[in-house]
Image (tube, rainbow, N blue to C red; front, side):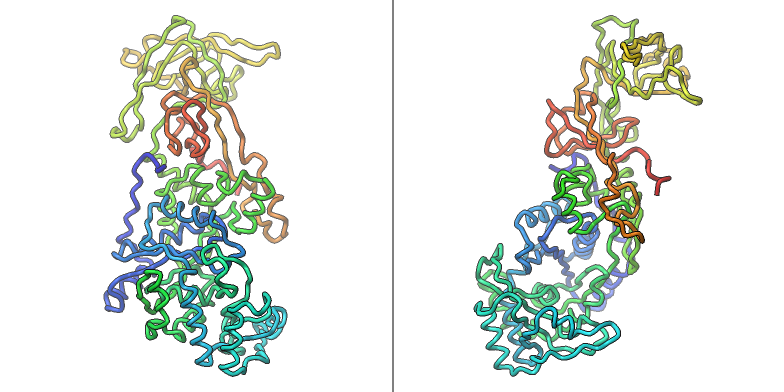
Length: 581
């Protein structure tokens, strides 16, 4: 279900980052008449916050310049991929407000990749190698030492074609042979030292079944997939900068645009023949402190039960932060504020949380809720007193209308809003002191009721009738204003108070190398039973509110029901961690 309020995408038309400048220049020069991008995740895990930047760039730039963006699933490693991840990826992209022009899979192009590999063999640009993975590493050399040619590098074209076809036929065991590019073992860029293009894996594929037992390597499949789809600007993160020469080598040596016969297998799939020469452009990835984004570490959190699954609201997955109450527009605002650069940096999580606060402050309706209840009895009201007070849904947006809030003799207030012995500067309720009840009038606490252990369990107070809304004394000054809910009408709700999952800014341990699990925050989730006004309980799942004076909360997308409401805290009203970093 979508967020109940409108969250327009920020206006990026005036953005002048280096990627958009390249796109503008390519259009102005006539190099491209239309822009084509793609978002190409591997379906081997759930997308996380870091992917939000790539999604916004890939889809956003295509939309800004009247182009199109494909969603392509890089499914070349079937041992690690799962249809569950495929469904989640599509759900995440749609949730962020984007729609792909075409849904593609790298596996759609397996036959084209194979024909391209045979073309490279015939050209003398690829060979079948029998070295083991350990031997390949030994032959590769180092950053300061050149590599050595494989003893199988000079096999004839005929022998290589025969061996490669037998690899495809399944004659050889996993790891027995690879197809490698023939480039330069002395290159200063280790990625060009005869990299593998194909490996043997006798593993069924989710889309192609048992049709293949050889699978293309990422650099080969990724570059040719971009070329096949006519991608003009292939946007990726900075760690692929050193791979760009290999990307260009694959595109140029295969030359799909100049050899359309290689694309004929696509016709049987109903895919268009639209090959071109893409340009890879790298940008800095999104890294935040207080988080871990490694798929391996996130999997460890899930499998060890430190969190309640991939969509736990403490997880940095898009599924998790959505359940936490993050909105698409908050993520887009964050991406806009972070900007696009060539410099990797560790960003403060306050940027992300601040974007959510700003978005929800502008759009989230207000509601009354009490999370640590203390009963307040207005003794000068009749036992059956009941009335409806009118409250605005948003103090700065009259367009969101008003609602009726029940008010009665017995109320719940926050326990921390009363102090029998007030500390210095305390401006809330004390014995003999006055405070304003939000929207209802001024009350004076006359007495307290305690249990056998001496704990305050009830307050008796008098409501000043002259301070009621519309009365002459309504604007009488008192030091504090507190919120409340009617004890008779409020709905008991489970409220999950989420906080940061880790206690330190660098949960990977920094220089001391400690295990990131040692930094888990034991208070990252507390569950309390609170009371909410009826209008909050009746909300649909995935509806965000500001609980006045408490923070921003969202109805849980899975567990919330009007008769048994469940709220997740999205973010506090202010950054409570600012002095702890």
